[in-house]
Length: 219
Image (cartoon, rainbow, N blue to C red; front, side):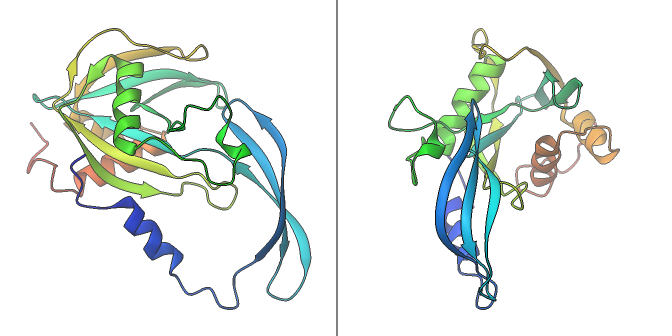
């Protein structure tokens, strides 16, 4: 993966943030609920003032978000039903970064599972959800989208030189329609607030701020 920004380095810088007087001490942890896709964990914690309490949060694996672009300036987007909001969502491909060890169990049962690389996950998700393949994968940013209630990390990447290569390979609970649109139109939809999918909004903004964005997207 061609990448000017190393996600591991970014994470290390974040953990170096001054925490004196703010950090909570974790004294115990228990997975209280699990289902396909995520778990709910309860940590026993001691606050800086000595108070002992419990804290619940969603425990889920990292995810990859892929902004696929063809050589002729088209973005590959997907339309997918989202049950939680009761509508069709239009955005870019995304999915879970899977375990590298191939163990048939969810990652939240282990303290520190090993995962496949971001590039491997990005190429797999792109092909599975759209049937496209990419010449190159470029890291855009890694974010914690809701770190008050989840420890999830989303790795946003740009996939360039995308071409159709075969059929989709969807999960049992996925119904996805693939379309293409000029990158300029996707940008316009994001800037106008018409695109509600947060992962797509972040990916497009990071793309526009990167060295990979063309000088003009108005054509």
